[in-house]
Image (tube, rainbow, N blue to C red):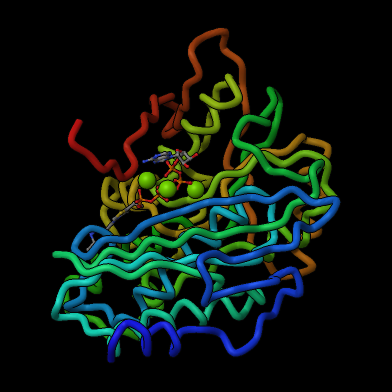
Amino acid sequence: MDEFRFIDSIKPSYYRQSSVIKGVGDDGAVIQPNIGHELVISTDTMVDQIHFNLNNMSLEDVGYRVMVANISDLAAMGSSPLYYIVNISAPNSVTNEDLLYVYQGMNDIASQYRMDLIGGDTTSGHDLVISVTVFGNVSPKKKRLRSSAQIGDIVFTTGYLGEAGYGLSLLDSHKHDKLNYFVQRHIRPQPRVDFVRVTTNVNRICLNDVSDGISSELNEIANASNVSIEIDWDKVPIHKDMNHLEHSRLKQLALSAGEDFELVGTCSKGDWKLVRSLCEKDDIKVTEIGKVINRGEEPSVYLNEFGEKLSLDQSGYQHGNS
Ligand SMILES: Nc1ncnc2c1ncn2[C@@H]1O[C@H](COP(=O)(O)OP(=O)(O)O)[C@@H](O)[C@H]1O
Ligand SMILES: Cc1ncc(C[n+]2csc(CCOP(=O)(O)OP(=O)(O)O)c2C)c(N)n1
Ligand SMILES: [Mg+2]
Ligand SMILES: [Mg+2]
Ligand SMILES: [Mg+2]
């Protein structure tokens, strides 16, 4: 399939968002701005062997996951998803026909949020690299910034932590069915757009999404808000079917493995009851894990465990040539 037919095949036959004036097919997309809203823009890239392994994941799953990583950032800003742009660089072994599966996987999750594909670019290269840029709407007063945590806030997380990392290790061991619960949590995670929707009326919530592991995300919040944070190990929500794991392994999974795409954040003590009851009504798991403190020092994150206060550094996933 040549590039022209390929673009024709991925071109949406209709757009779900009425604000799309021109989508795929011209030199650029044209969007009618949504009056009264601010536009959130975020981008994330996935690379073969770093973010996925084509030996144990289908191209459809890869497309799904890269979209989840992006939608999760829109959720972490408090915004509702609108559009996406896709840039792909593929080796010769991945044909344009094969790439249609990536788009299928992306559409599987994007369609759940009525998102539209509005453009992209395709090139050839050595490794499969997929980069997605997403756009979302947020009402100006409901942005959920990393910089908005305040002393005295409750620190919370949605869902369970460490499931995706555990799922990845099961997937790598080749001993488990693809339908295993934890493997599914790795290859088909769900972004927490539902949390954002049910809590829109809460005044101030500070949010970050779990891509690198909460030891990293909590440090990002502490630094951006110039506060310190302490969490209690025995409050960190861990699925009961992971309890058999060795303690240090469990800690590594829950705090540093990342890619759960849950939301971690803070809100005032007064609003915590409201957040909890709004989530309960919609069956969204949310757990208090600690509090925002001020120790008159550099922003830091602490883990209380067995009566000891340990420093929790940015030990999440780090790329790098540093
Ligand atoms: N190569 C880059 N060039 C410009 N900005 C970047 C680059 N990499 C990351 N950023 C910016 O740094 C901030 C943090 O990025 P990142 O740690 O990737 O966030 P997240 O974990 O939510 O994806 C974002 O504002 C992002 O746009
Ligand atoms: C084959 C493979 N090896 C390792 C991992 C684990 N992993 C890769 S990247 C990453 C962190 C998240 O990716 P990043 O690019 O840092 O996303 P961002 O923080 O920008 O959202 C993790 C935990 C994986 N998913 N697949
Ligand atoms: Mg990123
Ligand atoms: Mg993020
Ligand atoms: Mg990262």
